[in-house]
Length: 361
Ligand SMILES: Nc1ncnc2c1ncn2[C@@H]1O[C@H](COP(=O)(O)OP(=O)(O)OP(=O)(O)O)[C@@H](O)[C@H]1O
Ligand SMILES: [Mg+2]
Image (cartoon, rainbow, N blue to C red):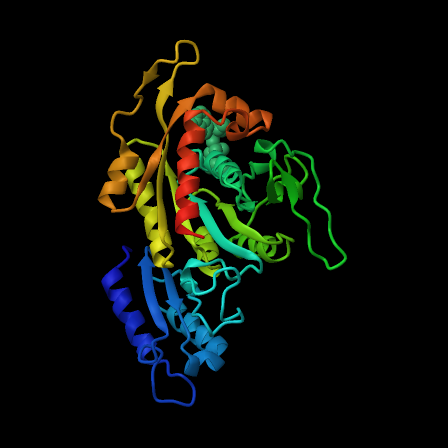
């Protein structure tokens, strides 16, 4: 049976109009609890927020909404997301390190961390971890205090890229973990906690739980920027993570083919859903540089990253060529930005780092 989106949306609307905030005659719709409804092929995500008068009933309302919508024909899965409203959550009213700054632009959720920035991609293997690691190095080079959290629980690659394979983080007496330091960065990855090659099957809620632990139970200390290398894709796990913390911005990494446009669009949608500003698009593996004669060949003529940036009106942050040496650097455990700060990759990411420093102080 095909998914009749219009019908489902209208049924959701009537269910929501029938759920009243306890002790009032106002529905959750009238009480402005419903921020967004996203329905796609039997999966429904509802973004909620709880204005002051509704906050005491948060748990009951979430359950009622979830139960009501789950019952609908054609709905297989319901995801309840909550948009944090400043002043109505457990966080301090004034975010740390950003006096007077717009609350939605700060990483106020993690104590001591000024800005959390996510690096995302619509699909795997486009160089997201390479960009995250080297961008972290470039940011640190500007004098900022930088952390790098490998959020890719399915395929953690940060330990290898930083030459930290086999390292084990220390626990503290307070049951927190100390990040591992390398190249001036503090870093944490599930890769440090697993035996090599042990297959792990993570389900959505486990991923979010684990990543929240990484955010809140790692002693990040005072950081200007905490970069998140997100798992590839823009599905539930990523959406839940980006909505559950206060991100300052997101960087999208893509390859230049035309088909990548769709992936970029998904990345943009993911950040937009949770109102996270998009810092811009980095196009990776744009052209091929011959390791012998250094001649540059445009492998994909389309320049998809730039086209996508223009189409979706987000900044284009630059392109990075495909260079054999970059793979070797990644495999050897020394980021190219440490080894070759004059490389095309390093210069592009240094300019992204400068932009981040200017935009998020
Ligand atoms: N510009 C580049 N030139 C050459 N090789 C690159 C470049 N960017 C990334 N690579 C290599 O491509 C491979 C995939 O890159 P990376 O692991 O950064 O991608 P990813 O998007 O994080 O992948 P995953 O989805 O598996 O997490 C790595 O071996 C990396 O060294
Ligand atoms: Mg990766």
